[in-house]
Figure 1 (tube, rainbow, N blue to C red):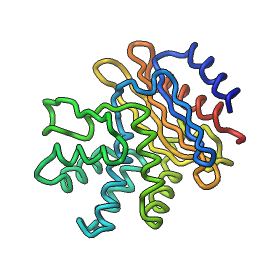
Figure 2: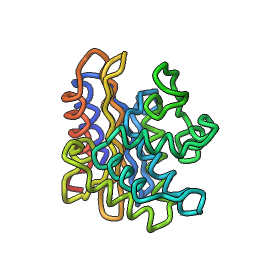
Figure 3: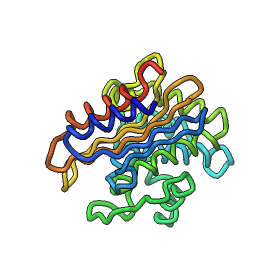
Length: 238
């Protein structure tokens, strides 16, 4: 794995943008975070993973009841990264105190999550957030460690059944590694961000979180290529 990490870091040195990533081997406990793993980056749609986990956990304890329409929206939010479906769920379940709901994500390990001001929606809004690759790493592992097995299996199945528009990033680990993921991509005022977080390997042995801030150096295509290659170099054939 040390050799694979060295190859990734060499590869990133010649790629556009700034990439932070965290790789975790849940079997050995080994973790590697590169020098940009604590950089604040727009979450884009990766935060939808936190929203889904929170809704499932709240439903499990009876705090909310998820209707068939809610389940449909959750699956659209995960499978195709549907923004409208996310808006519906966010506006329905955030409650009166939006900031308190947003702060609850810190309980999932997103301790550096910072909601960003917006003139287009009530503050805070799911689509105006920044966090770090280390936050996404903690989110993924908190989900794996704490969710009820039935909810976890449901969520992982959804992450492994994403639409073809998300077959990049952690998907680069290859089919033999049974990757599951939530990707996020958006063109922000300061340039494109292209992110990926997910699992790979038997028993979800590996987790990988990648945040790619391209600035003026590239766009969606370059970012998706970089994220996919990072996952391939680190995990393919393990």
